[in-house]
Length: 173
Figure 1 (tube, helix red, strand yellow):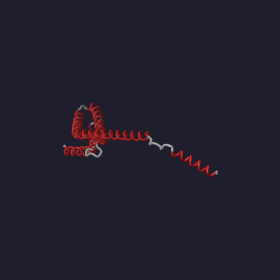
Figure 2 (cartoon, one colour):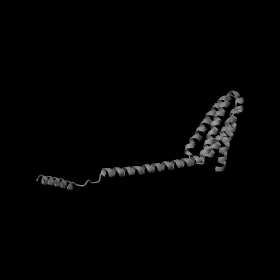
Figure 3 (tube, one colour):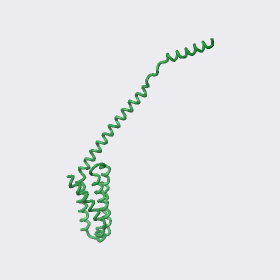
Figure 4 (cartoon, rainbow, N blue to C red):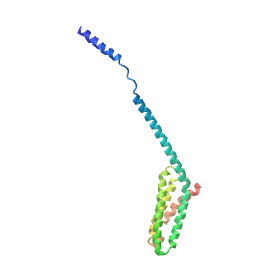
């Protein structure tokens, strides 16, 4: 008899399980998944917009690269001629200004490098930056007077950097 009671109790407890409602899908989890998908779509759209903006910025920088280079090169030439023609006592200040300007040009061309990654303009931008690095160094040497200026090294390297950029620009026009 005790076995029958145990069997009845077991059946009663199993019957209670059968009457329990089945768990419904968690609407909170479903909502979270939908929200995550929506957020991922928004992030993808923002990424596409950023890439489009970078592409537009790169295209603009590429169009302006050679004209900017040629303008900066002309200004460098005119600055050097201007300083050389100044009275000796004013030349040092002039060369300091030229060195500062050359540094700014160098920074500009260095800043283009990341924008031009995987672009044919990457290498010319690096040559232009190096040209102005060397021009700055040369201008700083020229602050010490005419003899230091004419004897300064780096002219050959400057000419090589300039030649590389000019050659690129002559083919890209």
